[in-house]
Image: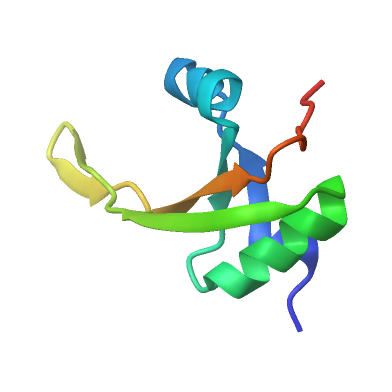
Length: 93
């Protein structure tokens, strides 16, 4: 069984995600690549003690990078956009 902290890696604090949180009650998290929406929902509800309305996920492909003659690629990752029910809020310190 996966730990809650293996499922939820970190919150994504960007200008766009901050605006989503303020206006639409949505929060964005970086999650593990092999987790599903049910695992994400359960982990967020246990960690932050909130009620979730909807979970959307997006797989982000890594970008190609080059340093001199060596080509490489940044890793693929997955993000989850969490919509909370009315009256719930997550505070990041």
